[in-house]
Length: 247
Image (cartoon, rainbow, N blue to C red; front, top):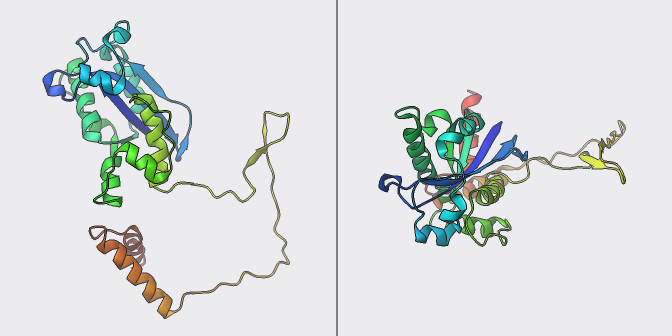
């Protein structure tokens, strides 16, 4: 599964007012693991950057003077993201600017949502944490993601931080290490895998099943979670899917 965590910086807030992209930052995930195959590009927007925007991201007109225009990197960008799932915080903002750039480049054509699936982590966070602050900084604090090195906004830096937040918010660790992960021997660059074999004569593991009282308490707890989350509870929805699958 290939996912791209994406962020952008712009000259201002609204492409309908002529504002443009000035930075695109993308981080690749494969099977929920960072690959290091990132995409990062500053852009010449062919207009001035608003002073208020410079205060946010620190990118000045002088810094962009020799950078390529979107049309010069558009095909490379689309090859990189095409057919993937884009993970974006407040996706409507970024996709609005991307669609604006695509229209300026080639006129009417497929939007970025036509070319990629889009997951908005802001919408996810609002569903998981209703009534709470769900900015990227707030989510970093909630999930223990270190963003102390983030003094100004930057597309690639924010995409890297968002990747950590997204993984934590949607499941965190994806593989439980029980001593079977690759270990590097001292003085060697190659990883070797240490495997253990189970004793065939070991005692059978005792299975303790929940009794009726425990199941009722569990159901009551899930109902309480759903009631406090606008009627949504992931474990209840998974149980319903399993029930339908067994019919």
